[in-house]
Image 1: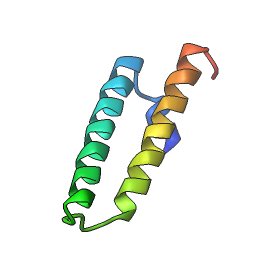
Image 2: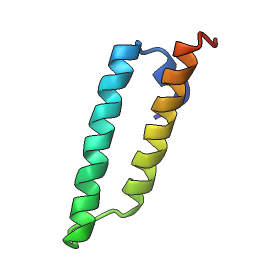
Image 3: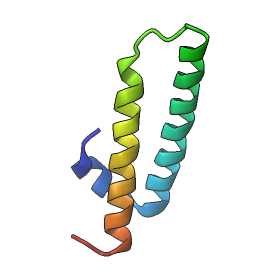
Length: 65
């Protein structure tokens, strides 16, 4: 997911995406705990995507760009 793609979304859409990513992260951590996780690097990618979404939300709230 690219930051410029996220900047095209509205704040409610970003918050929905954030909720979905946090749920996915929870599920990945759960899979890791029970040793069913196929791709451990996915956890890192989801964390970064969450950070990107939070950054874009903050930019929009401050009216940057």
